[in-house]
Structures are given as structure tokens and as C-alpha cells.
Image (cartoon, rainbow, N blue to C red; front, side, top):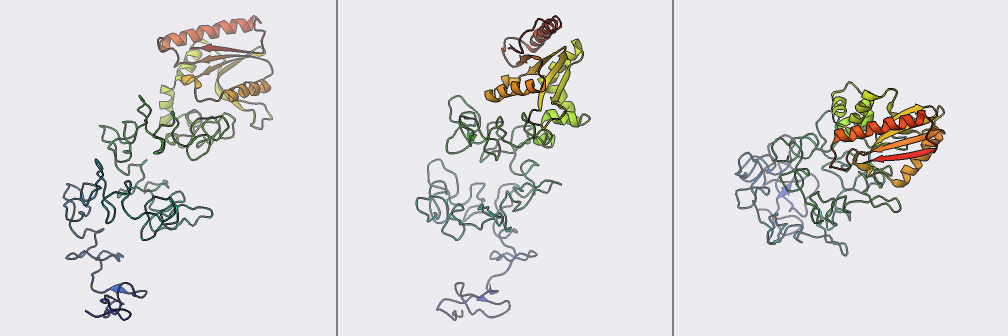
Length: 432
């Protein structure tokens, strides 16, 4: 075998169809290992596995013997890494793959570590740094320091990497299906009839208790992060940055839903009591969606199942003239005082307003509720009577009995207003 021109190592690199003259260390640009075959798949430049005409990615080498699995077998085993092949971490009860030449997985300290002081994360690729400290190529979007995805120049947030092949979807594809998790990519929950994505290394979705659970005794919700080990309700995950607020921040924002966080409905985004948009309603909140697209099949589902609609139907069956879930604002409204009331009726100089407080509006901010009363008074400077109806309160009373009590209360207040017996500018009546 020839020796390298620049050292005493065996030469194996040269330009295609030429004799080897350099080793791997001293090879020049455009040179290849002439003693190794290139994978025969179109546009693939990886080396073929010895004895095969393909690289490992395209089917060369020994394959995993699990039925239906086409991944390469690890080491001297007959299985791929996913099905237990290869060297495993020696930590008790850990089944993860050992990293590099160590006996431990990345979580338990195996593999090459980042050389930044006090950093224990895994070094990325052939570098000495973890992803956080620059071990991977960074996204080329101005101001973005996130690592790039695949062979692109952008991170996942800026549409780097392979994208979902569903028309109109810009989310990242997660596996060989070419789809994002929402559209069926990745491992699915194994509960019969459930098509949701499995969480973490489990075989179940979050709803069916997949993934890490909250460490609060008696709580079965999913943990929101690994550091606290708690769900959002019990303090896990990112918190709202409003002074004195301990609620969880929504989505990629720094605020909870009550303080304007999360992705908002495009129809009511500028309203002071705007609601969060939902993926299943094309980004609209359920209320706006059913008003804008009343003929859509999804609107019919909303109509059938919301408690607010049951209240509306009950009111309409007994009373006339109520306006339901429409914005209340002045003719010259600048949107700062636009508020939406579930059910209202103007009787003389008094507005009788019924609010369906599902779950007691536990997520609502108390200060905002006070401001809300001030806002509606600025819109209508007459008298107000609010009936706050909580259909979820007092589980001992069924819904039909609660609705009957609500209708009796409305009838009583209508009589008081017509007889001019309501003297206060604002009255609030709470039911359940």
C-alpha cells in the first residue's frame, strides 16, 4: 500500500480514478477514499458498507431483525438501537444506548462533554461544545442563536429542516412519514382508537398518561418541564411575567392567557377580552368561529356541546329580545372599551346581563373583571344587573335544575326592572 506524501501513514485518498497519494489527515479538497466504494444510490456520497453496494442509510450492512424494522443493526447484535441493539448504558434500570466509547448514555454522563466551564452537556459532532455553546451551526436568521436543522441554514422555528408534506403545513416533519406530529408523524399513542402522538419514550399520549408525570402527590397531569417535575397547574413550565401573577405562560409568549399570552383569535385579537385561537378552529376561538362560519360542520359541534349554548337556548325558549355573545361598544369605538357579554337585554335604562361562568372563570384575572365592569359602564351609563351563572358549581345539583333556577332568577329581575325596583347602578348576582 502506498505511503502518504506528507507522512508515513498509508495513503488512501486521491481524486477519483487516480492512485492514492495522501492519508485522511492530509487529503486535499475533492479527494475521496479510493479503496472504499461509494453508495450506489443517486446523489449519495456516503461509503458503501463492506460487502454491500449501499451505505448504512440506504440499506447496506446487517439490518435489525424486528418485524417491519429496516434500520441497521448495532455492533454485533441483531437489533437497531431502538429495539435494544448495541451497547447499553450500565446505569441500573437504564436502557439507553451508551455514547461513544463510554459505558453510559448521554443522560448519565457518557460520551464527549462540552468543554465550557461547569457545562455537562454533550458535545455536538466533532466539536468540543454543546449545542448551547456553539457546537452546531447556528441559524442564519438575524439575532437567532438556535442550531440549524439538518442540512439547512435555519433552525426549526425559522423553517429549517424537512417540513411536513401536508398542503399548507409549515411544521417540521418528525420521521420517515414526512409529516409533523399534528398530521400523524412520529410514534402514536397505542390506546385503541387514539391517534394522538406518543409523548417522550412512552407508548401513550399525554391524555392517556404518556410522558413524565407531575411529582405533586395525587396529580396525574404531565410534567411541564424536567427541572421542576411539575405540571403547569402546580408551578411547572414558564410562568407569566406580570407582577404578582403565578399562572403559566401560554405558548411561546411571556404571559398567561388572562394577561394576553398565547396565540390569540384573529377576529377578537384587538378586544380587551380577546380569547385564544385554537388549531381545530383554524386559529379562531370557538365563539368567533361559530359566528363567522355558522355553516361549517365544526360550528355545529360547538353548538351542540358548549354549556353557554345550552343557557342561550333555555333563555330563548322563555324570553324574547336577548342578544347573545355580541360585542358591546359605542359608535365611535376605538376597541379599548369593546366588551363581549354572553347574553344581554336592554329594559328601560337597565341592561340585564347573564354571564355563563364555565368552571367559575377560574382563569380570569380579578383586577381585569373590575376593569371590565368599569368599561361596560362607560359604554352604557345606565343601570346594570349581572347574573353570573356557574354551570359547573355545586355538583349536587344537575344542569336542568340549575337552568330552571337561572330562568326563575331572570324572570324575577325582569319584574324588578319593569317595576323600577332596582336602585343600584350595578348589581351582581352569583348563582352556584
